Amino acid sequence: MLTEAPQPQSKSKVRQIAVLGLFLLAVPFVYFPQLELSLWGQPAAQNDPFIYITDLDFWQRTDRENAVTAVSHFDLAHDLNEVPLAIGNWKGIDVPETNQEVMILLEPEQYIQRLYQNSAGQYIWLSMIGGRSSQPFHAPDICYDADGWQYNLGSHPMTLADGGELYGLWLEAKKRMPGDEIDTEHIVFYFYLFPNAERRLSDGIVLFKLTSGRYGSVEETLAVHNDFIQQFFTNAATRKE
Amino acid sequence: MPYYLKVTGAVIGLYRQAPESNTFYRSNGLLSVLLVSICILFTTGCVAPTAPPMLPPKGSCSLALPATATNEEAIRAVLSAEGDLVVAQNIDALMKLWEAGAKITDAKNTPEDPQDDQAWLDKDAIRHRYVRTVFPGAPAQATPKDLHLQIIDNRAIVAATTQIGSEISPAGDRWILVKEQNCWVIQSLTYNLEAK
Picture (cartoon, each protein chain N blue to C red):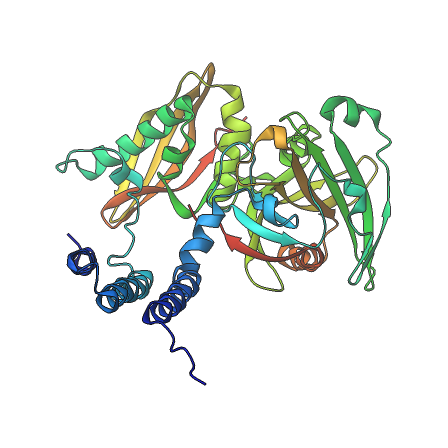
């Protein structure tokens, strides 16, 4: 029985398809870094709901703007109450704001206040304030100053477990309360979270603020804050334009 | 024209010139086009940057000063620009005037007592102070006056009176500038040095 020999045309088609396949396969490997960079310009939260843009300020971008991966939602499309109360070495309780003046003044869309404690007995207050205008975002130093606290202010990079640094502003504030013989001291660390790279106010912003007493030096206290932040944010990459 | 475009053009030209009837030649022509494309992808995709990124000019070098400007002229220009840029609320240009690790201190009118000082301890903090404390006041004038300069090598100490709007601080400011790579940059500002 005679078998029909394969046609040269169909052979060449197979070859063309194979080469085309190889060509398409090569593209993502070769251009992966560029593709990755170009993706930076896209809204971060569109593809991955746990990636957020962080920065020291919400007015204009600073050199410290970063994209961070979070373990929970930190945007106004979600209830900030869903942020875990028990995480890593830390356990928290909700402490609702009882001062109605705060709500009247700030008019936040969401306002969460919690007190966390770790197994070493160290406390950190977590405040998450969300809004879609500049009104809820009074810089903490302005409030401390208005209330008569003396403070120093600087920035600090928090190292994340899977790499990268998350920059925030820290505040070392002290005030002698009436009747006290020693100063009350607060160490505050805060930054802003944006759901996408456009950073529109209308998309919502969340202020992530930690407040604690002093545990040793400012640096040692910030190390405690760093441990807390590492539970919620796992890695960061400096924003590239 | 880049070499890879020339090569691609040549291969495509060969392909177009091939006789329609010659299936083997045409299919191999197409194969060549694709193979060349793959090579281009690999070579252009892996090209390293040819030049290191240029650092933006800083301090006095960010102000279009004549090359003949003296140290004193450059220092005066930096402090004058600082005031003008505050009024203009141009934060990016302002931050170019400051050295990395710079500091602003409020001496709280008790120059002999550093215990009550309030400090902004790096450029991030200085930026924050401009944006959240200085700019909201919308100053219409913020020019240092009565400058007394003392230049020692690459360091300058400047005592100044600053007028921000209607607020005048006579000899209340002390600026320290340093010269780095031939550019004068602000290292620190201490204000409210005048005693109560």
